[in-house]
Each structure stands twice: as C-alpha cells, then as structure tokens.
Image 1 (spheres, rainbow, N blue to C red):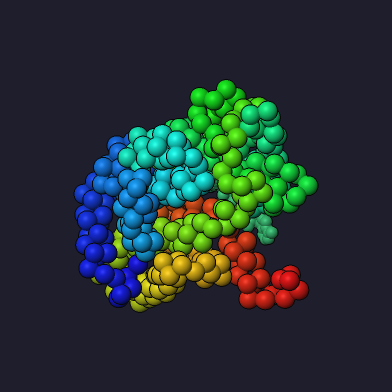
Image 2 (tube, helix red, strand yellow; image 1 turned 30 degrees about the vertical axis):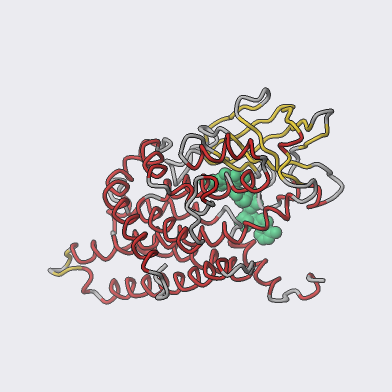
Length: 386
Ligand SMILES: Cc1cc2nc3c(=O)[nH]c(=O)nc-3n(C[C@H](O)[C@H](O)[C@H](O)COP(=O)(O)OP(=O)(O)OC[C@H]3O[C@@H](n4cnc5c(N)ncnc54)[C@H](O)[C@@H]3O)c2cc1C
C-alpha cells in the first residue's frame, strides 16, 4: 500500500503497526507456526492496540478509519505472520460484519463491542464439506419454528471456530429460491446442538486454527436472522469486494516479507567466491519479484481507494485479489529457490512464506472463480450477463 496520496495520519499509523510487527510479531512468527495454536497473546495485543475496531464506527467502540487504512494494517500484520493476519481478518471483517450490520442492539452490545475489545471471538461459517465455491449448493437448512429457526448442517474450514463465541452461519431458508434462498444466522457457542468438530491439520497458516462446525437442530430466535429473509447473498455481496481487496493487502504483506528475506539472503550467501546476488540469474529474479509486487500494490491501492469512494467494482476487486495473491505465491516460490536447499529447511522463514501463500488462493474466491467473474464483468461470455 505504497500509493503516494497517503495522508500523514495513514503514514503514522503504518509506522506504529510496523514497529509493533517488527518488535512483537516477527520474533514469534516461526514458533507460532510450529505450535499450530491460536495466537492468544498476539490476539490480545492487537485488541489493546485497537486494531479490531479500526473499520467500525466509534459508536461500537471502533475507530471509524477508512478502508485504505484498514488495508495498511492487514498488509503489515501479514508481513509479520499470515496466521495472525488470517485471525485478525476474521475478527475484523467476515466474522463480525454481518452481526454488526444486521444484528440487534443486544447483539451489538453483547457480542460486537466485546469482540472489538478482544473479549469475544466471531467467525463466519459458509463452506461445507461438499460445497466451497458453489455456495448456492449448501445443504445446511434453516427451518421456521414457532419462535424462530432450527438449523441443521455441517460446516468445514471454519477459521477460529475452536475459539469462537459466535458464528455467522449460512443456511438455506428456501431451497427452491436459488441464491435468494440463502440467509445468514447468528449462532452462539453454548446453544444446544452446536459443536466444533475436528481441527484440520493444515499446510500453512498453521497458527490460525481451522475446524469443522456441526449444527444439530440448533434452535435460534427470529432476531438471529441477519437481515431480511432472502437477502443473505446480497448482504454478503456488499462486503465481498472488501474481503477480496483486504486479501490482496495480506498478499502484499506476505510478498514483501518474502522479497525482503530473498534480498537479504542473496546478499549474504556466497558461492563461487561472491554473493549470489551478483549472479544475474539471481538479481533478475529479485528485479522481477519487486516489479510484480509494485504492480500488485498499485492494483490493491486503486481497489481500496475505489471502496473508500463508495463504489463496489467487482471487476477491480477481483483483479486486485487475483493478481496480488498469485504474485505473493510467485514471490514466495522464487524466494525458496534463491535460498537453495535452505529454502527447504524448516528453520528458515522462506518455507513458511511458501506454505502460507497458498492460503491466499482460496477464501473470497479462488483464482479460477475470480477469472470467471472478471471475464463476466468484461462481457465475456456476453450472453451470460442479461
Ligand atoms: C485456511 C482456510 C481457512 C478458511 N476459512 C474459512 C472460514 O472461516 N469460513 C468459511 O466459510 N470458509 C473458509 N474456508 C473455505 C474457503 O472459503 C473455500 O476453501 C473456498 O471457497 C474454495 O472452496 P473449496 O475449497 O471447497 O474448493 P472447490 O470449490 O471444491 O474448488 C476446487 C477447485 O475447482 C475449481 N472450481 C470450482 N468451481 C469452479 C468453476 N465454476 N469454474 C472454474 N473452476 C472452478 C476451484 O477454483 C478449485 O481449483 C477456508 C479455507 C482455508 C484453506
């Protein structure tokens, strides 16, 4: 997020997050990854720093910052640890936004305000074992009861579910109505029928715990339907651009960390009597990594500014996520090559960047889905858009 139009306030904010990350995140990132456990202490430190409320209004204890500033924070956190970035992304956007916007005053006071202080944890549960990209196919069912709804289904890949106090759950209210038959519900831990299933042993972002969630005839009051019935998909769509651009910002942070690491290593590592950085094959890799990262940065900055201007440009947000996340994967790959065999050793950071970068490719739309969206927005195939 290097765009030249940053305000003094944004620059100061970046410096403060950066020094927090340099001081407290980077020194522990490797150990967190090895332990593979939710980063409790850093989570609390982020809460104390006010990060969770950054993009929320002051009325609920937030800071009312613009989206660009939020992306600066996410980029910096991901530079230190993408696991921490994933946890904070869930707490500040996907896991709290729909409850904040469509919950009751009681939900905001009891769940959102404490969540922004780090006292409660929220997450979103859309994906199922058999339905990921195909959200319209989910089989979790919400059926009306006398006082509300009964929810039954199984969710998969749910970030922070092991720790979460509340879940924003996607369920079908009308299986015949397509996307208009999907709604989101607030489900709280401790409600009879809610259980967290097995924790998934993952390749990357290992300190961001991910698990199954089982909902067995969970009875919830009608006030826990988030938004008017039939508008769940539309309401999700309102933050989808933010989710994509924010993921682009996470990718910039990881890409920068891998690039910095590769530059340092290539200047230190000697072969044939000189630093490997002096071999053109290596220096050109660094040049290409830097160029790609700058291009990704420009695209993410533009997409973030676009959101701050109140626009919802699906094509631009999809391009930003696609390009930045693929770039982060390219840079992490090149970084491990520059490290040679040491890129294969668990004691160096290079392997963590390489593993963590994969996480960026899934949530908010896979690269394949994003390309399809972008093409559709560009009128290809033209007959799909009526
Ligand atoms: C670490 C991690 C944390 C996550 N956290 C959460 C969470 O908190 N909450 C949540 O709800 N979900 C979460 N997810 C799930 C994530 O959002 C899904 O993995 C994602 O939506 C992709 O779904 P899938 O993995 O089932 O892949 P699938 O949809 O099965 O796709 C498999 C492959 O087929 C391709 N494909 C599918 N459909 C098409 C198509 N129409 N055109 C072209 N190609 C296609 C995909 O691009 C992909 O390459 C998480 C995932 C991970 C890895």
